[in-house]
Length: 148
Figure (cartoon, rainbow, N blue to C red):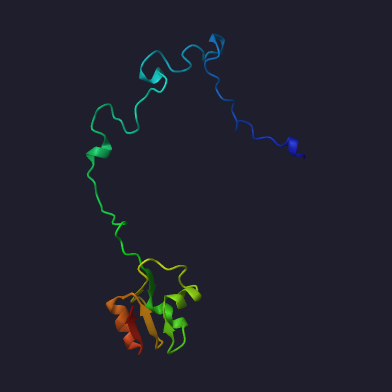
């Protein structure tokens, strides 16, 4: 088999319909557009979601939800169980987490520690924000939570 012998399966490719090429082609004169009217004209037709003057579905349904992307405070979030990989007495901050490849890059508002999981090491954790359960678990393990 050579590359010039490769061809698509039968019926996979069909020739494009050549419209407006004379009466004998069967698609001459009106070029499959019918007679007159909005759809027969160049550039004719209606905009998407136009429903013939009826109130469109997009305007009949109520607006829902609210997205505060513009003023949202975005943090890097980690749970307390992530800190078990560090040694006892170590000081852990966002740069240490990046070095350990726990997080990829810093967000605008820094690090937020969440309280999911169990912490078994005595650590000093420096972050911009802590949840109440995270502080409780860090102090229960004998460590300290420092807010930057």
